[in-house]
Length: 215
Image (cartoon, rainbow, N blue to C red):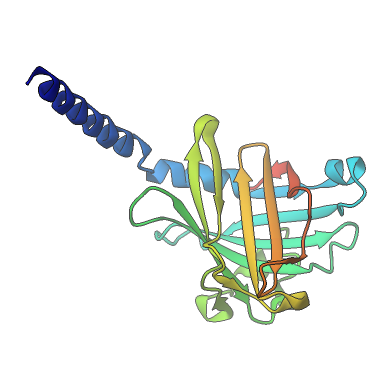
């Protein structure tokens, strides 16, 4: 009888602890704002490229746009291989919002129709003034689910095998990310239908050091 009572007490304590952990882990609008501030800025992989020549020197910018919206945060994203900043190889729009369960933040990815007209938008905000949702194409399954860890570090990845792509012989793409106040680490890889890697870094992701922040 005493053992049963002890076991019952332990079970109750476990579930009380579990519930309290769940409440503590719920993310808020403050966390969402913090992540936006971490991501908003200009970044460079110059140091990584110097240390390991198998990595390119890439410049990444993420510029807040549509700041009057109240459905989260929107960022214009541009990536270029240095020094050809006028010829970005990737232009996207990211939308940051709290997941319904508030356990993570969703970074949804949109492609831009006719993206050439927005080249340089990170430095010339006027180019982005006329962008609307009609300019965007959703990429379902390519969103990142970012969870907050200690020391205000966010880590996350795309849903397994859901981000479809035929680029360079791939069937799908995976993206992993780690974000803090000083850097963004991204690891994008393409996989064929046999789940073999066909493109992307083999050793680790790209380390983007923050050069300066955008408001």
